Image (cartoon, rainbow, N blue to C red; front, side, top):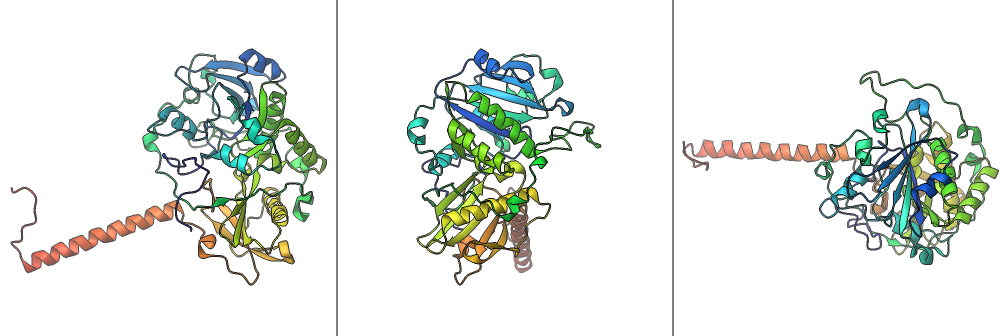
Length: 444
């Protein structure tokens, strides 16, 4: 793997952020960036078609002073949380030393699951479809976060003043419990490819839309061991959640204060018209609107090699996909379609992609899959990396699948154990040679 820190255009990805926050207390999240703050009454009126549960105000100096709670799948304790913030989106997502409260909120998933520092910056850099984004984003002064959760405490829905951690029945989180900063590769951000390709590949055509439009859900049982409701229900449907959240955000975008749609986990930015076009295009083809939920990015890895990847597939509980290829030999538009088709295949098929699997790809040749525990660009995540089987061999750092965290820890422990064993052997040898040797330490 290429050494050095990831180039995110000036955003520091350190400060304790070593991975994107996985699903847990919250399972999905989408944001609306605002020109100016929206009043609670205005937002409640805008969402009046939803079943309102309660309103909460923060008990501390919280950047999200008010949280509105609505029903979502009440039979499994599901809720929609709408958090109003009078502050711009905090793209650094907090620092345990400088902004510990924000950092802990990020660690709990309150800034949406899978969000990682610099996600708004990267979304802007890799969003050429919305040409006015830079000038529009300068108007951004507040935001709304929409989150799904199944673990709200029933007794905590009475509107008392509390923060989101207390609403979840969890007040024990500490920045000291989080790992050190992520150290990854460096890339120069390249131009974003056009997203006007209509084809999603043969695999996408076979996807049935009724897989994500079901309104019927089976009853869920409590955990057999703990007797408590699990973090997600047994019939959990990630795509159905995203559809519900997207429709909620569509409604909020009708407010005059609303600036644009922002998906932090998928690093997607769209204005209202762009979001509506993308959704209509997907629904007319009976496929989920992946382009509105996840991004395809294009990087210049070296002078001769390109990297393209998806970001956001983790929202649907499938890995992101990458492609490395010589820049002069493949059309980025073709690679984009290939990555979207691969994502759709992972989403719609029960079969997993493994090392050495192959697929027909750009250039009318086979592309080989590599299972990776570390992607080549932020955010840190598992990926499936595709490499064309042509006469070119990518640089070694572009083929490195990364090291699994558990394997890394086990390896470090083995090294430490071996070093301790060597120290004991040296001590035994010293005592054998000189039984009266001074071993240091206080005399007894």
